[in-house]
Structure formats: C-alpha cells, structure tokens
Image 1 (cartoon, one colour):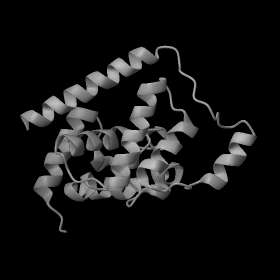
Image 2 (tube, one colour):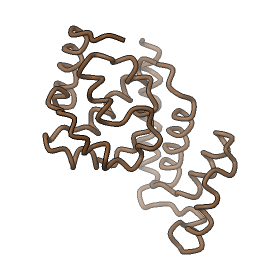
Image 3 (cartoon, one colour):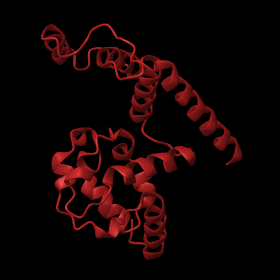
Length: 188
C-alpha cells in the first residue's frame, strides 16, 4: 500500500468534522498504545492506526481487528498529550465499517454482538455471562477458564447476572439502534 495524499486529506477532513479531532496532530508518542488495556487483541496498535490514517490507509484500518475490538475505555484519549480523541476516531471508524458492511474479522463481529446483547439484556456488562456467550459463539469453550474460576472465587466477578436499574430503557435504545442500522443498510 502506498501513501495517498488525497484519500488521507479527505479522511482527515471527515474525522475533523465528525469527531472534532485532527489525526494529523498525532506525533506518535505511543501513550495511547502504552495505556490501552485491549491492545493485545489488536492487529495494529492505536498509534499505528493513527499513522495509517495519516497516510491514507483507510481500507486497511476499517477492516482491522483494532477498530472492531476497541473497548472504548477512553484511556487513550485521556493520556494523549495532543488531546486527540483517539477513542472517538476508533468509534467513528467502527461505525463507518459497519455502515459500509465491510468484512470485519469474525471474532470481532462475534465479540461485539455478544457484548451488545449482554448490555441490552442486563443494562450493564455481566462479565461471566458475556464470556460464556462469547466463548460458545466463538467456539473457544474454555478460553480464559483458568482466570475466571479464581476471579469468581474471590468475588471479583459475579457468577449470576443482575439487571441494572433502567434495563428496559437500555434495551429500547439498543433495539432502536439496531433498527436504524438495518434501515441504513437497505438504503446503501
């Protein structure tokens, strides 16, 4: 892949309008990558994604695991010395990839669906239930089992999920978002 100045400039303008942040301001300090709790699941680190966007490698970024598996903890944004909304950029890219119906990695698709279904059902993330559903759907049945049992035993993770207050409202918002995304797919 080669640098495409026109694509890079066009993307930069779109992100600037939507996210109110300029990817060109990133000077590759690596704070975003060093503080990301999910970076071990990514194919490109956050600072690599920012650089790829700077040089116009949009399609590679949109189809990456990195964009899809960002957990939106906002640590990268909080630690950026240039005050770049890295998490906002990732979220926008995830939305663009979904709207374009790009072929995202299957494990990322399964993870996102299990996560969102879990939040819609309980109004919050129920870790044990989420991991069970994700592991079943991804066919990694005993993935992280050696970590889960000690965490449950120490009371760090609740075995049985509890619904949060306002769960019905969260579920309503989720259904509305899914309906909207499906209607946008039909328009495209």
